[in-house]
Amino acid sequence: QTVVTQEPSFSVSPGGTVTLTCGLSSGSVSTSNFPSWYQQTPGQPPRPLIYYTTVRSSGVPDRFSGSILGNKAALTIAGAQADDESDYYCALYVGNGFIWVFGGGTKLTVL
Amino acid sequence: EVQLAESGGGLVQPGGSLRLACAASGFNFGDYSLNWVRQAPGKGLEWVSYIRGSGSPIDYADSVKGRFTISRDNGKNSLYLQMNSLRAEDTAVYYCVRDHNYYFDFWGRGTLVSVSS
Image 1 (cartoon, chains in turn blue, green):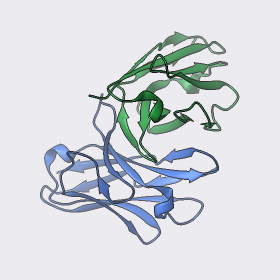
Image 2 (image 1 turned 180 degrees about the vertical axis):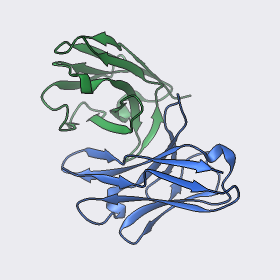
Image 3 (image 1 turned 90 degrees about the horizontal axis):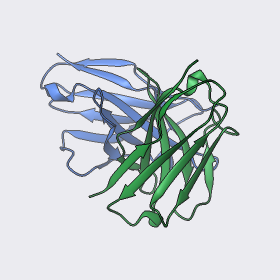
Image 4 (image 1 turned 90 degrees about the vertical axis):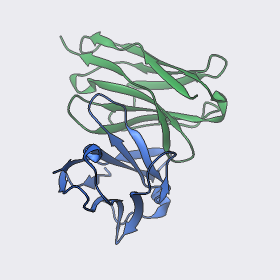
């Protein structure tokens, strides 16, 4: 069974930069996994942030960027702001049909 | 404006059944694949099922395979999820999610399914 790993929690100072990662138990993440990232605040549905590894969704500020770092997908938030405090989820397409797997999510604290 | 509105959630006993629906508007429904994604209380997101715009192919997470059935009616702009043999671990908010070529670009607000005796 494929598992997608994310840091359970992360902390960043206001104005700081943080990089969250998304790994694959079966090996390296590549662009063929179509990594995407979603932001969720309590009581709200997830909001798309990044797709196709690096493309920002409409309305997402350029403080948010996506990449492949080593063997993982990564979401970097630069100039962190208080309202960036959220849960962040990555999703990977794992093939074998039309199968997707979400990571367990990273709870980001800005303080 | 793209809108996805789920309905049909509620309280059901273990072993019971429930049918969720998702009413879509604001886009050419038949042109898009759709998914169900769920989130147990206080937990992360879990992809549940996929259906292409034409109605096939279809796919399921192992955790629901054989118990859940996804379907759609393009004439009614509606997506469905028939859930049978429900278990406590199926308790979650179920989201209807549009698939825009390998990413989830629009999400409904979700409907809560609670499985409990």
